[in-house]
Length: 280
Image 1 (tube, one colour):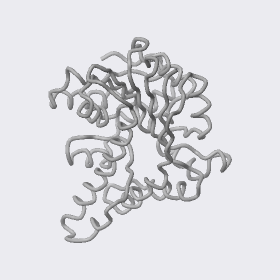
Image 2: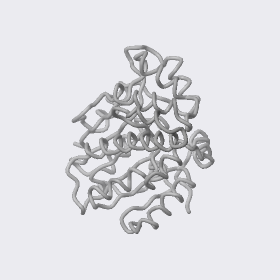
Image 3: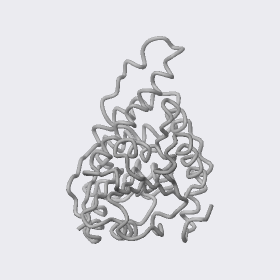
Image 4: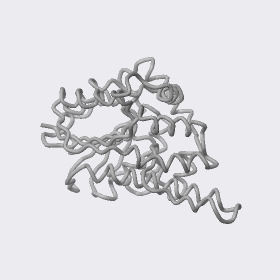
C-alpha cells in the first residue's frame, strides 16, 4: 500500500494515533451490526436502557449509543442531495468505513474513502470484501488535502468529524477541484463559538485529547466562500447531541472526555454543526 502524499509531521502524529487506536467506544458499538463509526450521535436517548437486569445493561447501552450514531450518519447522508447509482461519492476521513457502507446501501453508487491511517484503511477494505461490495466501495491510504483523484470526479464529498485535523483553506480548495459543478459538500463538525471568543478551557481539553485543532465557526463559512462552495443548509445539532454524551458518560465505554464535551456544549463555547454547500 502506497503512503499518502506529503504528510506533515503533525499528520504523521495523527496517523500514528489512529493506527494504534482500538477504543471500545468505536469497536464495541460497531460490533452491534458490523457498521463501525468514528463519530458521535444525535437524537433523544432512551435512558431506560440504564434500568432493568444488570447483566444485560451494558449491551442495552451499547446498542442505544450505536443507534444514535447511526441516526447522525443518516442525517448527514440525507443532505447529500439527489444521488444516482451512476454517481461517485467521497468519504473524506473515512475511519473504519461505516458511513461509506451506509451511503452505498442508500444510493447504490460507487464510494471511495480516504484516511491517513493504514490500519483503518485495511480494516475498512476487509469489511468491503466481507460485504461483497468491494467493486463499489474502496478505501485508500491518501491525504485528504492532496488525494490525487481526478478533477470533477465526485457528485458529493463529506467529512464526518474530521475537518479539525486539517487547514480548511487547503481542504476546501481540494474539494472544489474534485467536485463537479453543482456537486454537494457536507460536513458534520464540532467548532468553537466565535461569540464566546477564544477557545474555552473545555475546547482546549478536547483538542489535547484527540490531537486536533478545533476551528472557529466563522472559518468554515469564510473558507467555503473562498472556494466556490455556497452553503445551502446549516443545522445546529448541539442540543441534539447532548443526550448521546449524557448516556455515554454512564456507559462502560466512557473514555473520560464525556463531561468535557457536556461542559463545552452547555457553556455555549462549543457547537456541533451540519453544513451542506454546493459547488458553483
